[in-house]
Image (tube, rainbow over all chains, first blue to last red; front, side, top):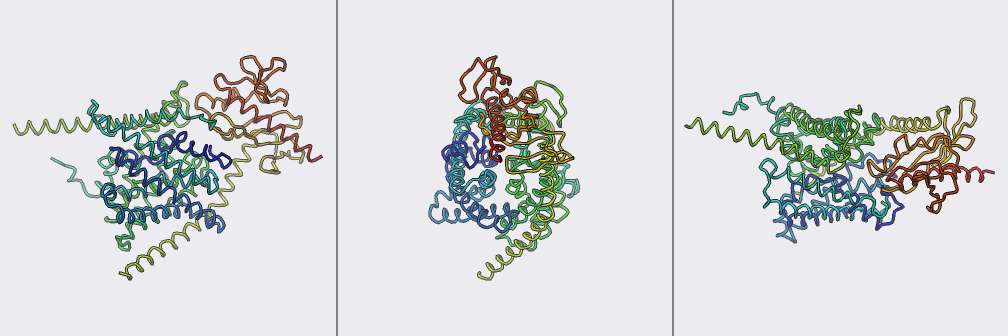
Length: 197
Length: 213
Length: 192
């Protein structure tokens, strides 16, 4: 898959398109289906996720390699990573509440939900699994966040369109959304093999 | 006439997670592992056991300690407790079944952010007795398992032609094993469920109109 | 207000300390079992490559020597990898004392399901059994493909049939096996 020898641009493309975190790796789906009902929310969520992902990638990498590994405390990995993310989301929420109140009102309940966004925790774990160095971890994290944002905005666009389409009653809402996701996933599968990744 | 209320509370607590409050099909939460792990029945069973382990113990301890958990810091405390049990089951699986570890991969630690577990902790275990919380954990865990089992049954059968690694037929449709197949399977299941729910509502309405007549 | 914050910090810290100790205990208890499992799997994999072996000695990350009960060398195992269609294909090759391949095991692959991952099927992988380095050349529809230049040669007899529609995956495995054999040659030359 992705390994430390790959050049950063390939890592970015792999994380964003070829192994898109939502449509190919299935990580981060709760927010994907819950939020993507309109484009505005999706853009906001995408930006917030990107911000948290980048910073938590850096912090969790540093904690892992400078603290947990030397002290043989690897088993604290899960706890420390998720607490870092929770703290960052809390900080972000306070920041947005103070300096960007309209955005805060628009995003409402979704801000705390970023903590439980599997995609961010997934990104931190994948960086460790792929043994990436700090620089490539950051690129990888950005790639995942951009891939997430891309997928969620595209999906929101599709869902907005389908609201005016003649959908059978049983399929309205979530079932048709899943069919849409299936088609999107099929499309993204077409990226496989790009640049020999 | 709602005769569900006549059942004792404890039975209701147990049944909630399976039917009316089924986490995946009704509440629509905790979807990540459902789509990723449902490629084979072996994975589904392994994941459900890990999930139930974490759900049971976290519900148990959060309910036991609920008097000591101040409301303002309850979320970080939930996270610490849940991540402890996730780490425990992670190492148990590594030690007992490396094959399962290979299949589930990063999804074992991802149980810690599974909306279902945090959701049940917040909505139920924090406010209810130990016995109710434990029953709720079993109910939700079983509800989760039923959905996961159904989907992986369909996907493994149609996508690999095997059932629990026993070959059934020889020309499977690989599409079902890939991501798009997963999405379609769960979409279909939800669609079927919605259809029956709508029918039930329609029949209820018809009956109440008839009674009024 | 400050008292509340101190109270919260105190509770959180106590909880963290207790859970850390619990996790340290679990880690300590499971660590030996985990290492045991990994060694078992590794050993089993190596045993399928060279069945007559009794024990294995790992010299470096890629190279393992297989001994029988009387401490005679019965073969060597070399790990190798080559870029395939969807990523690196990692393999393990068992080589006997006559420099013939005993078996090939694919450890990791990311090829197209149903197409490239046919390399896992015995129909393809069994072709490598009992072949020497000169015999491990890709053959596609009766025409041989040079491992080095990718150009077709009609002179040399090829012995490994490619999978229809998955030339890249097949070629990658062939090249990986050749790399493993070359590594063995290099290593033994260095020792002398």
